Image (cartoon, rainbow, N blue to C red; front, side):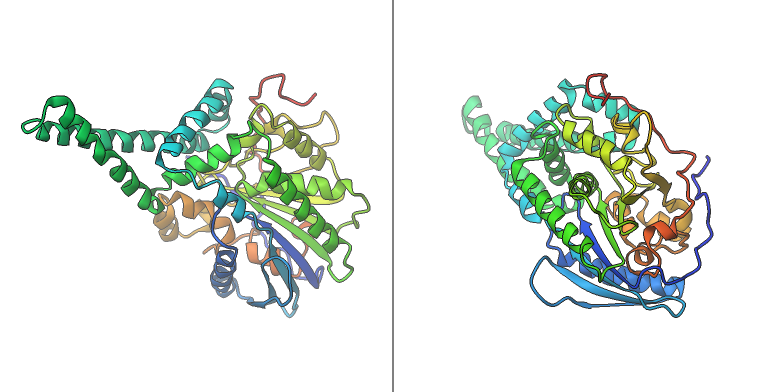
Length: 413
């Protein structure tokens, strides 16, 4: 089987292109507090620095504002500094995860109906099967859990039928269904069934539009990034979006650039493990598709998209603009689409360890690599080269997919 490789394995030589950088990070659909990302960064950057032969350390950031920290590195005698800020929307995520058991199954019905009735699910499967299978996973698992609970109820009713009339025995047997389903939910941290359903339900709730509270939050994010761009103390402002945070980042950057007067060469965008089509294929995601088109043509930003075929939760090597039917007829510049090639950049032992841990692999972009090439998350966010300098001259992978399976009415003209 052919394995996707990097186009150029050489590492760029260190030079002082960036002395100070402000990194903004937009997480995916994640209810956990932002300090989780600081701890992940601390552990994984230490491991990567040891593997790659540079030094890196971090310290708390003082003052008000969003959660963040300061990172300093030492790379070939250069000592850049980065301020990292988490653009948090976990409170919105947590509010969307309050559904009880009955409400969860109702969400399952509504979400499945939206993806099926609009033809979105079939089009997503045509684009890439892996994320489509991930979308079907909570459906199959939740129905399987319900079946187990009903079988247990039937067995209990059959056992009680020697003491009670048949209908009464089976009616009493149904009393075990709620505790069994609650039991499955308590161990969801092992299976991520409810989490995935709620993620898809949140995306589909408005058929591709962001809810008003999220739109307001994106405006706040854009304001903070604009302020960093106007700060002469930063040489680069880098926005990182991961998973469903990618399509949020697209809309944020479109807002920022539309304000005008973005300093040349200062703004960069790193999208990791994107699942953009899960939203952009929905019928009312017109604004997202327009933002994708707008961003793809702008010279104010450098946009690098990184995915990996080993990540079953992302649309690996699918150009998020072209695959969303948003590519302009002329003038498209972004993104540059490359692969992190987990099968090559992780040692065989590490890859085997994580190969079936799909959520762990989905976060690998933020972690250390045993055999790093030019994609190194920590040098990108805290090293001496800007994203544009580090990937200057790179072309998209030859395996990048540009196919679009949207209906003609949904594609931008």
